[in-house]
Amino acid sequence: MSQQFQPSSLSYKLDLYIQCKDLKNMDFLSKSDPLVALYAPHPPSHLSNPNARKSSQQWQIMAKTELIKDDLNPKFVTPLTVDYHFEQQQPVKLVVYDIDTKDESLDKADLVGSIQFDLAELASAKGMVLKRNLQGFGKHSGKRTGTIIVRAENQSQNNDDVHFKISAKKLDKKDLFSSDPYLKIHRKSQQTGEWLLVHQSETIKKNLSPKWASFTLPARNLCHGDYNSTLKFDVFDWDKRSNDDLIGEIEMSVNQLLQRRGQLIQINNRNKKRGNSCGSLIFEKIEIVRRYTFMDYLRGGLEMGMMTAIDFTGSNGNPNTPQSLHYKDPSGRQPNQYLQAIHAIGDIISYYDNDKRFPCFGFGARLPTPHGPVLSHCFAL
Image (cartoon, rainbow, N blue to C red; front, side, top):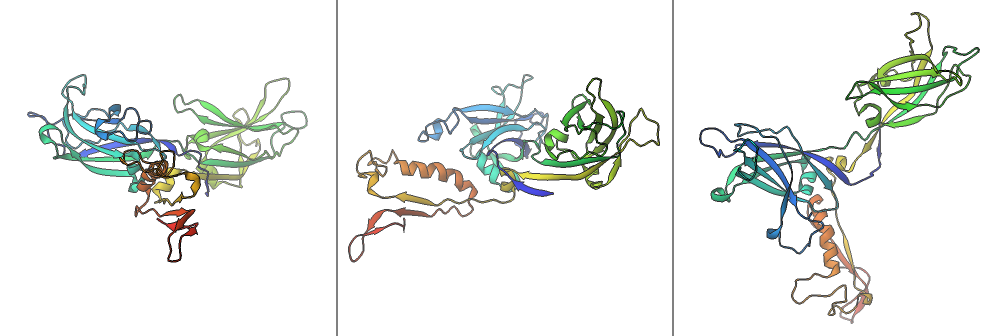
């Protein structure tokens, strides 16, 4: 299997699978009936004022698990789906409820505990698994009320490609002297089980041993990413004035074809007597090409660092005036544009940097020396 990295996006859908352990029992005559709800800031944190106080942040429910009856160690089946964006800060909150009503109302439920984290913490965690203590509410505030385990899985479909180079040999003659063969590939519908066309080759005129052009199909389209699922390869003879004639067909999976690569594979026609060959297909090339995603690299231990260089030249203006990019607000409430940019990027990158150390340099400033100010184009800050 060859390997190739072609990142198309740094945004993914993640499925969060939730498990709880040792939940505090909120009922008297039975065990709690837990349900977990996922909350996100409203408006989203990347759209809100970065200087707003977190205590005033409003939370909106985004998803919830199923209800599990009488269980203090539940493993929820229903995943909580979130959109993960690498370039954004995305705080989320998980709240565990004990449901007491048939309509599963959260307003009437008991609050067991909650945790809050950023999706970047989960995405950069080993194996994309977080294990945290739940923090209680009310009379249990500040106390541990159980443990919650969050496992994330990339919801995006199989990103592999499958490369093909297919030829045929000694096909049946369906016309007077030859055939005009082309190839169709089908897969089964997961919903209905019917055969669905996923590829059709070009037609090669008057040739009983054609070599079709190479082609590539995404694995998610070819076989839903399941290399053991059965595919159907049909060879037809093209006819201009009548229906095309079936020459022969085979049914095999990608894994089976990989084992028969380069070999003659006899095709069959159910309308033809056994023992009479219809010809053969040759899979001269069949190769799975893995296209690694950003999430794959994070799972593999990818770390990132940030180095900052700040322009100290006179083009930035007088740092004592509000128009300057280096302006120092005497009240300290309004950081200048350089600080805002450093915080905006650094707050994201810090989750993916093990030592949390970020070199910072300046250029274009006159630095004091024993012999007087000297212009420097690179100095540490």
